[in-house]
Length: 324
Image (tube, rainbow, N blue to C red; front, side, top):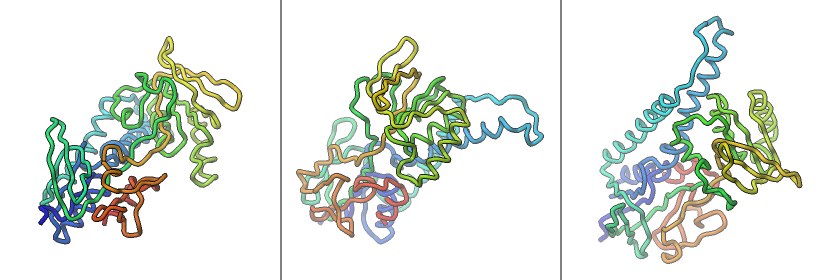
């Protein structure tokens, strides 16, 4: 008999919610996590950005205090304290998730998982040691990772994804955001409010997947706040300039050259299936990610998948409901 009733690979909003629900129903559960409990949402996405948003919103309000009869002088931004506040918010929630898993007697194993077939999962720890686990059922909840375009200079110092920018504790004088989705707009508005000169470059238009009126009105609002937009512009290459980075792009046939201290690449997400051994285990994938049926069963017996790894919408609450 297998030592687990369920192995969950990934501890984000899909994985940890599924693990807790399974434990509530009496299952013996092991969760495998290669990074931090809570996944992208709690550690590198929703929660830290909302904490920074609170700092940004407070800065905007402070700039208008005199409009409400409150005189306190010009506000200043202390990025070290902004990030300290962000870390406190993240640590409180991730700590809560860890306690929940512990409270339900869910075994948490740190390492990178690979399917070995027949209910077996190999976990490689950071120290190089490996552990073999076995279960009647395996749930893949590894989420998504950020898609990075293959252009020259994308690996230069100062070119970052949102995860890396969240770990950068400085305040760039000039921030260029490449992308027009909700992640791009969130960071553009936050850093604009904190004092950076922000430029947004997007291949088509801002928030193209949302209602057109939302896209139009948000663009106008952010323009009033001082953000510069280059819509319909395709990134060509990034080079090291005399003062920071030089970004070369094409707007139709017109060449566009912009300078920046930091470049945020926010061009969407793709399912995170690297190193899982899906093909060897007989798990089929498609253009959107792992292929599942209406019960989240994959093509391999006893293997299930939920959340971002099965494709959009990439939303935490969707993964949680699928997990339950």
